[in-house]
Length: 414
Image 1 (cartoon, one colour):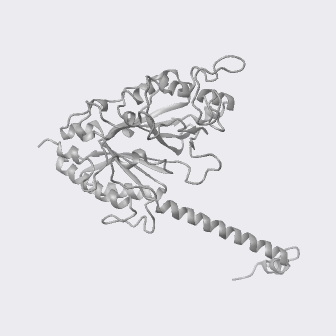
Image 2 (cartoon, rainbow, N blue to C red):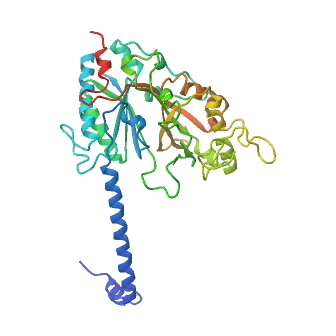
Image 3 (spheres, one colour):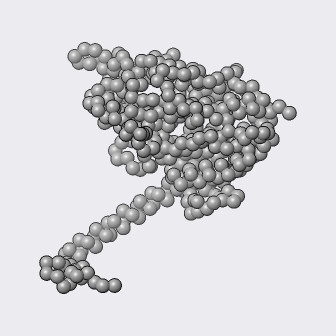
């Protein structure tokens, strides 16, 4: 290989000349910088290993994805039974998915594994399965009243091709490859019984990336999202989240209902607003998440608080006011979500927003009640569009010696 002309041309310094001209002090500085980078890389490697080694057991009273901490990566897929699929094949699918889920959530390969995650740990993988009303009808099982279709709302622009489904599968983990591998494994197992109807992926901040912010994530509007979410141990938490009504079948007791909505954010019009106007629409400060009624992020909102110059601190159409249990007959839902950014639409607007997930004991008294108010009276509704929708009954967790939805299978006709 010919050397650079730097050795022969005036005014140009070769790599060898530059190294020769470097002072001892400069060399020491370079060495220090390299050492610092190496130490930083070692710390990052340790953090990554800790994330990868974490696991969440698949078996339990509830499916793990319901109460698991917010994950960095999520994928929601809907499956439809193939024509002619039988109840016995559905049982086989659930047994096999349970076997595979136990392996995957321990970071172990499944039969005929594709080796996509060789060397990876479980990375807090959770796999949560629910059933649409269409599946229950195909199996000849009575549809619980809370699984009635979600009614249409003003401003909905739902794409039926990306809505509904016989089976819903939510996968979450700290690593995107782990999630993709799990979905791929379940899809292979389902061949001949169920096929993917639609799938969508999203993201949250990676564990440890935030600085002096706590654990509340930001959405693509720049707002802290999830501050007021209920927590296990809160008064009435189980009654709000888990199924147990007289109208719920025995196979669903201890389970829950999952509402999914793909919500596109109109980011360009939103970004054109002043920060003050954005905060008025939400009812919280954008930097700290504190309610406009005062305090810090976790201070309870005071809907009666007044501004110094007069008028409500949290306006009549602010999102936090319209979404509060006080304005929705006490309705409470356990919200989760993942941001998505799927490039740009033909008009140049971002195709981006929120994959919204809500667990509750009865969608009619939870999500539907809240959304009916938000669609009509919430200023934020002018900056979002609901584009996909699905509702699934999520059975309780599997017993260690059993399989997912075992009680439903035992209740199948014939």
